[in-house]
Amino acid sequence: MRLERNRNTVTVYLEGEMDHCSAQQIRRMLDQSIQESDIKNMVLDMREMSFMDSSGIGVILGRYKVLRSRGGKLTVRNMNRQVEKVFKLSGMDQIIDIE
Amino acid sequence: METVNSMKITFLSVPENESFARVAVSAFAVQLNPTLDILADIKTAVSEAVTNAIVHGYRDGQGMVEVEAALSRDGILYLTVSDEGCGICDIEQAMQPFFTTQPEKERSGMGFSVMQTFMDKVEVQSQKGKGTRVTMEKKLTVA
Ligand SMILES: Nc1ncnc2c1ncn2[C@@H]1O[C@H](COP(=O)(O)OP(=O)(O)OP(=O)(O)O)[C@@H](O)[C@H]1O
Ligand SMILES: [Mg+2]
Image (cartoon, rainbow over all chains, first blue to last red; front, side, top):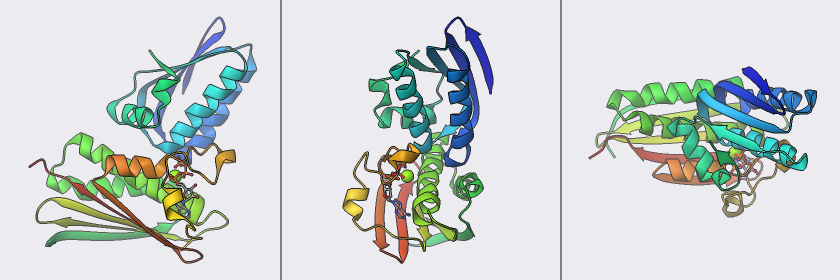
C-alpha cells in the first residue's frame, strides 16, 4: 500500500484483496494516514485491488464517515469490474465520488 | 440434476480461509470454462457466505466450515456453505439489505444482498443453536 500526500489530500494505492481477513489492517492504516497530519481529503486508488466483498464496503463507508465528520471528502478511482459491481450494489456510488 | 463432478472441503473458521475457499471453488468451477465475470461473481458469493460463517456463526469461538460444490450436466454450479454455529433467529430479517447484528464492527449488512445479486438462486436454512446452511446456484455457461 503506497501513500501520496499533496497538501491536505492523501492518495492511497490499495493492493490485493479487501475481505474480512485483510479489512482490519487496511482500516488501521487508512485511519492512521487520516490522523497523522491535517489530512482532509482521501483518494482511494483501486487499480491494484483485485477483489472486494462486503467487508470492503464497511471499510470504505467507515472512512467516508470519518472524513465527512472532519469536513473532508472521500473519492474512489480505478475500480475493476468486480470491485465496481460490489461498490454500486451497496449504493455507495450515490454518496461517494468516483473519479 | 445429473452431477458430472463434485467436491467438498472442510476447514477451520479462521479468516485466512476466506481467500482459500474463494480460490478452491473458483478452481473447481473453471473446468466448465465460465467467463471471468461469472467466476468473479462466484468468488464474491463464496466469500460472503464463508465470512458470515466465521464472523457470525462462530462469533464467540471456532468451528468447522464446510463448502460443497457440484456441477450438473447442464452447466449449473450448486454450492453449499454450512456451519454448526449459533444459527439465525429470523432469516427473513437477516436477508434484508443493510440488516446487520454487528454495526459496531463496521458491517454493512450487504452480504446476503451480494449473494442474491451475484448468484441465480440463494436459499438459507438455519436453526438457532444448530447452525446455518446457505445453498446457491449459478449457471456457468452462456446458453
Ligand atoms: N452463518 C451465519 N450464522 C449466524 N448468523 C448469520 C450467518 N450469516 C448471516 N447471519 C446473520 O445475518 C445478518 C446479515 O448477514 P449479511 O451478510 O447480509 O450482513 P453482515 O454480515 O452483517 O454485514 P456484511 O456482510 O455487509 O459485512 C448478520 O448480521 C448476522 O446476524
Ligand atoms: Mg456478511
